[in-house]
Length: 97
Image (cartoon, rainbow, N blue to C red; front, side, top):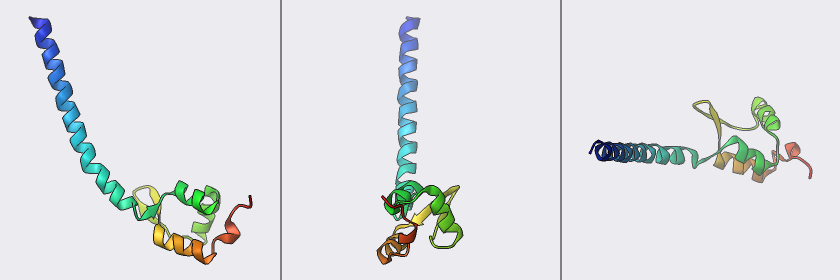
């Protein structure tokens, strides 16, 4: 009798924890995706522009690349970065393959 009751309590706890976690994740994920959908991450921009993270840092220091601080993360506006790439202003910094 006690074993059945203990199993039932464990299952109820698992179900409640799963529901709470699912609710929390559904609340935070859309906000993050909405915020970052208009921005490149550091890794995305480095891959896109064929530059190293050190080169990106140097370009930030020189004021060539606009950035937005989001917490401790630097994000780069897609429209402005795409305009810079299209204009060729970042070409002198790209790696030669």
